[in-house]
Image 1 (tube, rainbow, N blue to C red):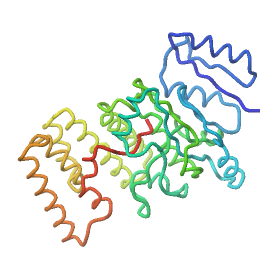
Image 2: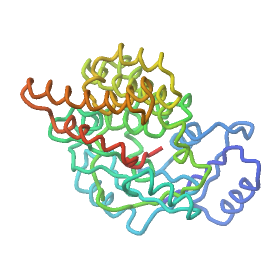
Image 3: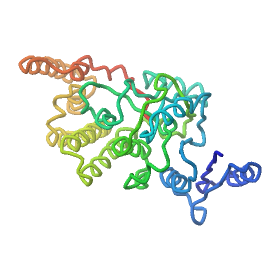
Image 4: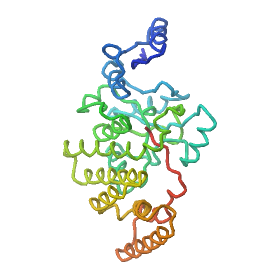
Length: 333
């Protein structure tokens, strides 16, 4: 029989009473609360549920999200056909609580579907996420609402979600599951769940996004060093963290921090979009001097890669500076 675990995270409205009412009406529902009814946050609440789960499989669903029809169709087949499977992931989309937010989302993001773009074997999934699996570029990502895990596999995780992260703690957890566990792609071409977006969502806070990503990648980098997963992986994670630190500095027009980031991380000079970010904070976004510096940077970038025998596709993609259009893929956190 299935079980539904409702974690009541110290809310100040009538949520606990509603949860208790559901628990009384439905035998599959169990209500969980933190000691003393405290508010502990998303990571601690999910950890509480994972530790309390008593069934064979675990799926996640935030309070304002919904599962769609056929949510577990691919999962049933894969877990049956592949006894080594620790988890299955699929795509998710979004629904909006206001038309204004839907317009803002469409302006910021190129697509609504959060998913991976390529079928990747479990043993290559972690490296594909951090750009070290050569056959796959620009993998994309999946969200916690689209992930189903075999409960016993969590015993191989040295820790569950990091409770010291307040942004992207779910994404950090997903990245580590991709390293420790065998995760298979399910329905990645369509949504199996839908997240509700409203002004209070953390994903809608554009200002905090670079800082949240920087802290998330630094947490992963610390874990990678501690676990000794390889110098190339550690370096890749550090470069991601430095890149978002640069974005945060540029958003704040912090020239000193931006300069220190570029000096400490020479690999960022290979990314023309990062060079453009630095020029914006150095000369001013949209300034005549900044535009001329970008033209020179683009020419120099192309010449240097020409002398090196040609630029890889991910570098060529930065030459058009697609971020200038202001769109990216939806973030899972």
